[in-house]
Image (cartoon, rainbow, N blue to C red; front, side, top):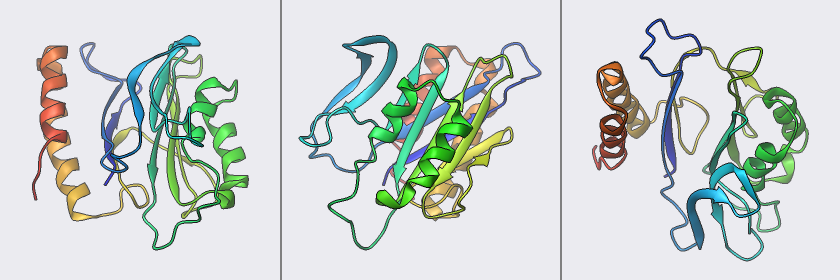
Length: 202
């Protein structure tokens, strides 16, 4: 399953603390051709992986821009898939290239949510004049985007923070890592997060 964990603290007390720490795995659709995370050929402002499958080219599952826009997508597990639904990966890239703030964008997405198979979308505006803001929307959950307060979150193939065993276990491991993040060099923190995301238990 796709899974991501993030800690959001827009006003950390310690000057050495991170405002956002995010770790994500894309554990499905291995057969689908894709490009690894890199700056786009047509834009040195946006960094993401990109789908290369015919009909879904240019979509993504996680990306960030130098302007502080961030988006992350997971699919929602459902028994039947509509093969004629719109590609979900464009939800990420469209936000990264849009001039809309995260709330306005997710409101627009919510009005069109029925056109897609199940998904969860995180959209963030970082380094804005109004401070860091993160919203969540899932088209199988509440109809309105959810403002996220500072905290630690986990997201997989159900709604945000659904208490699946794997998600709860990973969230605890993630919390353990970030407790020590201020005492780790950036490279060491990255390695700890990679180790976490490679964990095969339980």
